[in-house]
Amino acid sequence: MSTEALRATDITKNFGSISALSGISLHVNKGEVLGILGDNGAGKSTLMKIITGYHKPSSGQMFINGEAVSLNSVDHARSLGIECVYQDLALINTLPIYHNMFLNRELRNSFGMLDHKAMRKRAAAALDDIGVTVPLVDDEVALLSGGQRQAIAIARAVYSNAKILLLDEPLAAMGAREAGLIIDLIQRQRARGDISIIMIMHNYAQTLEIADRVMMMQRGTVTFEGAAKDTSVEALLDIVRREYRAMRAAAQ
Ligand SMILES: Nc1ncnc2c1ncn2[C@@H]1O[C@H](COP(=O)(O)OP(=O)(O)OP(=O)(O)O)[C@@H](O)[C@H]1O
Image (cartoon, rainbow, N blue to C red):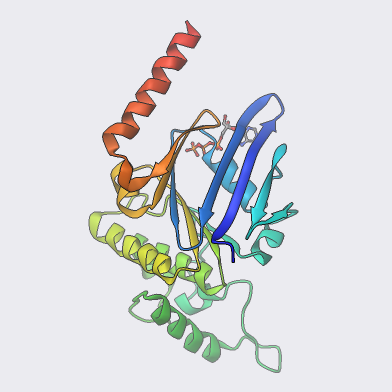
């Protein structure tokens, strides 16, 4: 059985005359966390949108569990177990936690009415199983902290059977305690062994703490890829500085 969950080879993406990605290759294994770093405009979001089926690449190939796929839509990607948790989290503040866990796939009773009781029960069991602690599943999401909201969004993706989970800056704007909650949650999902996680990150130290492998993107290319344990914040910053120097020299 393949241990590789996803592979993308030589992906390019052009928006008119703008080349957002010029020949990106990456892979993530089952039970592995890949951290993607890169400045604004490096192409991280474009790459995520290709993996989630939102954009079609201009060229290149993707493989899921070793099989070539051509994603037609976000729903197609979802049907293959690819889920993305974006920064806006797509939670509805005025709905209770349990309903947010079932957004767009609500449970209904035999009369076609929303089955709140069943959703409440299953959401509580799922959150417990995934290891997310909330005060009450009846609470509105608006009452939760940023970390708890992120945890609910991740739990929802895991519960919907994500096998390749993409996280767009999961620790953005979080204090140390809240970030710790999410780091624990990510590490518990990795420990299950059947989920692969690709995270866009900004903080180098946190990336090295959580990820198994790190990939650095600059100007639509991969400028570094390697095991987190074999690199350091300083080594990554050196790569960024080197790239800036090369850019400046090219512009002169
Ligand atoms: N829909 C689009 N139409 C035209 N250009 C786009 C589009 N989406 C992205 N781009 C361009 O592609 C390049 C890569 O953008 P992208 O958003 O993928 O970078 P990023 O690394 O995610 O940046 P950030 O950290 O700021 O979100 C940029 O030059 C951007 O302006």
